[in-house]
Amino acid sequence: MGDLGELYQEVILDHNRRPRNFRRMESPSHEAEGYNPLCGDRVTVFLQVDGDRICDAAFEGAGCAISKASASLMTDCLKGCTLGEATDLFARFHRMVTTSTDQEVEDLGKLSVLSGVREYPARVKCASLAWHTLMAALDRETSVSTE
Amino acid sequence: MTDLAVGVPRAAGAGQAPEPRVLDVARVRADFPILRRQVRGRPLVYLDNAATTQKPQAVLDAITSYYTTTNANVHRGVHLLSQLATEAHDAAREKVATFFNASSSREIVFTRNSTEGINLVAQTYGRWRVNEGDEVVITAMEHHSNIVPWQMLCGERKGHLRVAPIDDSGELVLDALDELLGPRTRLLSVTHMSNALGTINPIPAIVKMAHAKGIPVLVDGSQAAYHMPVDVQALGCDFYVATGHKLYGPTGIGVLYGRASLLEEMPPFLGGGDMIRSVTFEKSTWNELPYKFEAGTPDIAGAIGLGAALDYIGSIGLEAISSHERDLLTYATAAVQEVPGVRLIGTARRKASILSFVLEGIHPHDIGTIVDQEGVAIRTGHHCAQPVMERFGVPATARASFAMYNTREEVDTLVSALERVRTVFG
Image (cartoon, rainbow over all chains, first blue to last red; front, side):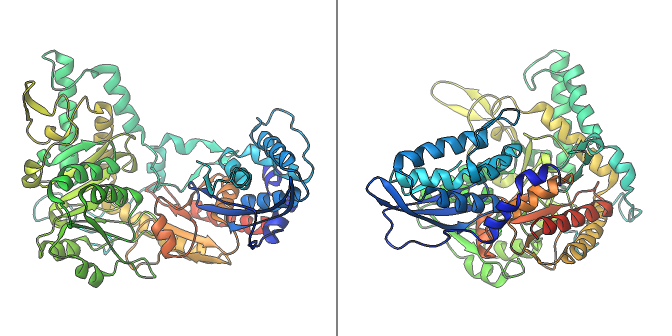
């Protein structure tokens, strides 16, 4: 499949078909809506934070396979993280999807399946929408736009 | 006259019908150098013409030749180059007037694009005529450029924006539009052809409806003007806007046609050089039409490039272009519908050159990225028409749009690329 396989890996297609944590959370401690005005993708991220630790994370919304898979993988990874670890993970993820393709990137475990998005600059925002929304939720902003 | 052609086809001479011309697509393609390039190792299949069209060599040559031999500022020098530049700029305006069959080139104002044309009318005619409680009517199929300027105007002037509905096929509901046109309506602004749906609106009937109530009509011709002959006098509209880059011309040049009697009454748009007759610190007086609406040094090369583009379109013939594109649309509509899971968005009876669709369970962005790997350029997203997307309950669509140089083989490439999308997504 060549380059395309780098982007649409089976893991991504699976998370697109069966997104994890895809539900509305009743009374979350943190919540924000993210919107990509370029393509109309919307995602709402919900967090349940207990003390310094994220004990539950969920999302809902409509978007492409990349944005949906990214939100699904993100919410999976966030559970059990401290707030500091979540912020750090955001920075590392952001670096991974924006580093130029001729450079090595850090292995972020299952999040690494999204590193292929670097080949497609028009799609980087799809992968990072959920993450920007996470940061807005942690900053107690109600909405964020990736433009 | 075909059912797709709105307005009267221009006859070659009075009383004699022109020979019907058939478009020789291989010859046309040879005129567009970009079509020889490859994309991702495959021949370019450019189906994003509703966003912008490619440029024929004649346009590129006209721009290069202007800068190589004639470049000078217009309307202000006594030297030879300034005279030549002024003549070339004036000639381009004449070509535009002829292309749209305006009664005079005084009615042709150069703008940057259609968006600027609409904003010009909103900021001049609109500020002059729309007062508290007055209304501007648009339709539910407008591009953002024919929504936002009126929202801004109505916000400023305390007016109201009214929106005529469309039906499930993407056709304007004419009875509902008629009801919306009332004693407080100061302007109806409507697209000639929808960029998201392909719908062609029955402009002569709509203009008649509005004029019966004394309401002027602005027609957004951004999409229509490169697909069908446009005759502003036959349409009867008061304003018509178009953009050069969709007419196979350069970006940065657009056109506003305005009825001379209205343009004369309207206040100017931007202030500056060229749009004035005389300036003192106490008061300035305005230049004659169309210069009153053209402050500052214009896009001279852009206008000349547009003139060359219109000449090129004329050499092929808009009737021949219309007929070729209609064949492609019919072919593509049938072929794309064969792909399982496809739902067409926009199935009006009168359409041109635009095929908007969604694939069940697959987001248009994913479609766009995957078909791009096959060299196929389509547009995916909301097409600057978010209210249209909302009307059809989709966040976005994939849109293939055709121009004079596209072929059935390219449609076949699109269809096999769509099959690949389905394979990737299992």
